[in-house]
Image (cartoon, rainbow, N blue to C red; front, side, top):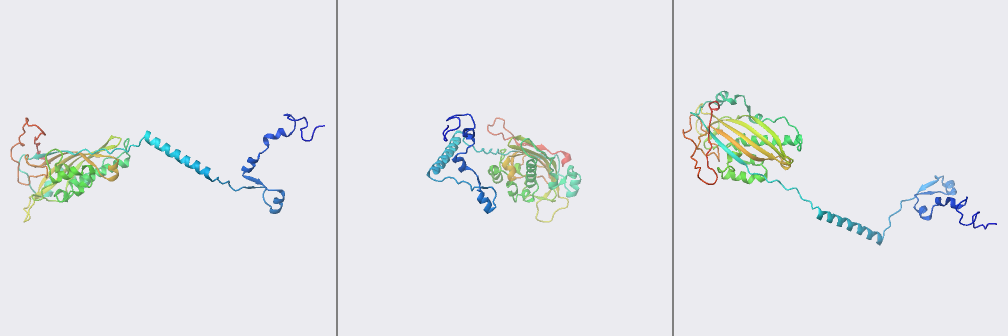
Length: 354
């Protein structure tokens, strides 16, 4: 007869209907302790009318010296990994692109005869500027679209900034009469302000420091505006110069009505026209677009009527009504001289623009 402590077919018998058949379903003590549900006893369910099971409170993390050591080790490993990555792949902040100095050319246009005079309205009605827009209305934006690396809003911001620069440097009465330069300077990239200030304080004919390369300015002791309205016509265009640079080009003609700067009674019909054509190239990077500023790369200016030998680096020197240019060419040029060429540039003002 089999002992009561042994299975019916003897010890170690893997087959049959003993407890070994359900051994894989028996939960050990650690599994029971980790369980998230606990079954109520029959007596508890009768007394409290409670459901058959209830959730146990969450287990708390063990705290103690061992947990603190593990935490410190994890922090040290993370810090070491960060240092290693920084040494193997150091971060390099993007280098700022240096601003190029402005390169400018100012060409006086000499009249072929006497400068005609008259009233501002009469002179403008007979000139090619009769149908030009007035003031900033003549600086129109082209159709705006995105480029490969600049959004439509960024392109529009560049064009608006260029328009603001043209208006400040060509239309502001205080700038035209030499009273102020701040409206122009505040639109420049700070990297160009030193060159700009030197051009204003000590203008030179060196291709970089002519004040009239940056703005339109007359000598207030000799010239005054005969009428506040300035006629303007021209174009703005843009293109992407690279992944980080947007270029805007402008080509505008400005027609001013001027008169002699006198303090006494004025003579009727003493006004005359003065025409300035400005071809400018502007450059913008991402920071310029964000801060509403620009760099002026090139400036090509033709202005008349003026005398050819006149020094126009500090201010334009218009010939007024009744005056004429001397019939001689520009200053002589020595082709054997070394250093920067000192050749004077001069053109002839055509009859249709008088």
